[in-house]
Length: 156
Image 1 (cartoon, rainbow, N blue to C red):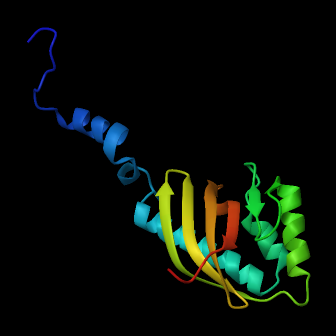
Image 2 (image 1 turned 180 degrees about the horizontal axis):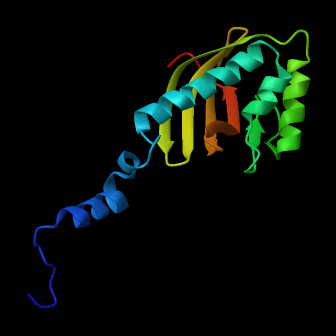
Image 3 (image 1 turned 135 degrees about the vertical axis):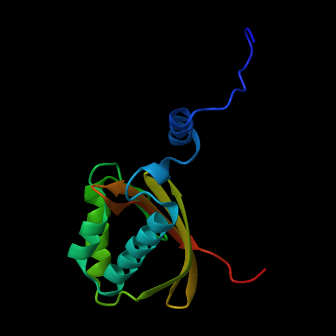
């Protein structure tokens, strides 16, 4: 066959190379399995809400990425970009003695390589919110790169 695609069977090393390159890279990389990654991301997401409810500024700081630009949109706030303004905003919020607890639920996670997106609902003082939390893998752990929370309607 000249100039065309060869449909000859692949030998095992060729097949392995194709699988590694195209379709199933997580099978061949230790610690890379989408279901396990999703579970780890959900644990990181739960740690975020736990730090909020415990008003633990140090834990909140530790959850945020250091290797990428981070951002945050709190309900009713301007967009915050950069680690320093984001962490300062959390220190303000968590230092507020009247700050209500936040309840989260319905988390759905999508893992795309080294990035994960969690969409979930939040409830603060009876007000429904929708949130998106974006995580990046940093030194083997999932860290927050972006949090966006805003009000939503409960009705149709």
